[in-house]
Length: 469
Image 1: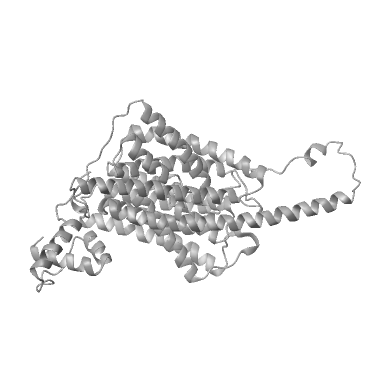
Image 2 (image 1 turned 90 degrees about the vertical axis):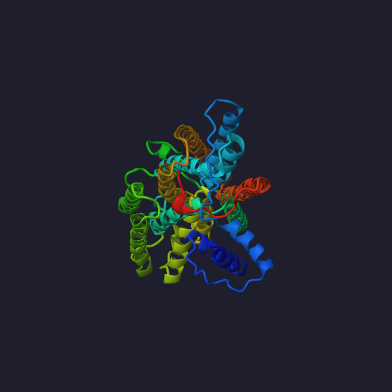
């Protein structure tokens, strides 16, 4: 890249930071005649800015994989990963905000390898959580706890965003990722916490009304026959939240469409592995993901607009969705996937608060977000594996930890909600996980950035076309 080229990049970077981001990712196709009248003092400053943001051969990434040895680091990491997977599966966020700092600070992986192993753990926790939720019913309606129509609307966009996010994970510098993460997570955690308070107040009112009705009925004694006979045992049973039949509790057509999208993306990713990065076929295969995801989402969106399909989990609040609403939901689906692929987190950090704003009950929001995450997270694991971003033995071990932890967490919180009668507990866990993730990941990012500055390392955008796994 010539001298005038760097001047043009730097000048545009000072005037508009967004243009620099796009330019860095697109391999800088600017005209060399863009900067002709620049003062010598400005040239020196602009040169420094241009070299900081972009070097045609700049690549500071070298993976750090510690040997897998049993010791205090593995034990402590296992405990933190266990609790992160337990709470993350309940909130529907996966737990990546806990996994990445643990893998970086305690186990000793580099940030990008930690991101990849975090996705493996999220996949393990999501698979066990989905298996647990498949047999559960909606808290108030006669339908599954997983809203398959909502998942079918969001999941294809989520997977498209994941593919974009994985590419950005290679290109973007750590400092930019840290800034985006802190801003996004502080906003979503605040939103989720306020929604939790609102739900808590509604539950308090309902509990008071139920207590009043109980007092009124206790003042008027009712005479009923003694519970004897063959049907007596059935009369005193507490209603179960488990469906009578697992097979009937799964909507197979929607499940099949979601699986079709996953298999299509898998075939594209495997085929892409046999092409050279930035070649014509590489970009053709990448763009093939768009019609696959958009086609399935459009099928579901048209049904929701015409009233042929509804988000049944909203109960009596069912309404046909308008075009601009569907566009917003799809945009957030892509955004959730992009954040997940970029940061190694579950898309539930975006989907959870979004579903709650839609009026979806907390149990359904958590179950549906995790269901969609199972497909998207497993796809990003395949992409990271093809990029050789993580050591398989470590990944298998932590996947097993997350799988077991998620089942235990789901069972414990389900019992706690039944005892307290407050589903808002799920929302507070969601807000807590997002906030802790913002602090932990933000702290790790700032610490890494300071160390790079002290070592005078390259901190600009990486060259995707020259990336060598």
